[in-house]
Image (cartoon, rainbow, N blue to C red; front, side, top):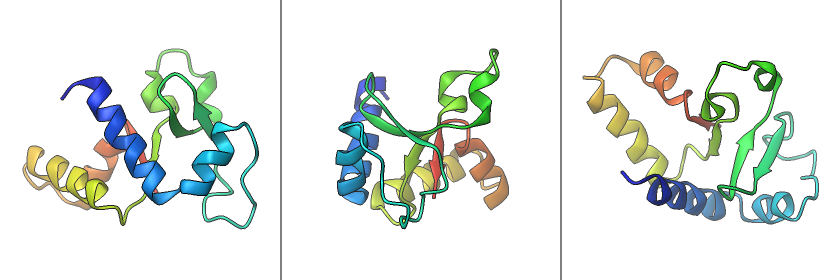
Length: 110
C-alpha cells in the first residue's frame, strides 16, 4: 500500500475515534487528564498529520521513527480491526501476542 494512502487511513481512524483530542493536539494544546490515554506522552506529528506516542525510546538512535513513535489507533474502529486481521492472516495465525508484537512496530492500539 502507498505510504500516503496508509497515512490517510490512519488519520481517518484518529479523526473518527479521537475527534476532540485530535483537534487539541493539532492546535498544540494539551488533552484533558481524564482521557483514557492521558498517561501516554502523545504528540502530534505535523509531517504526517497523525497522533503518535512519545516516550523513552526517542533517545535510541538506531530505531526507525515509526517504532520510536508509533501511531495511536482505537481498537474498536472497523479499520483497526481489519488491520489486526490482515496481520494475523499475513503471519499465518500465530496467536494474539505475536500479532500485537508485530503491530507494535508501527502502531499503538489502545
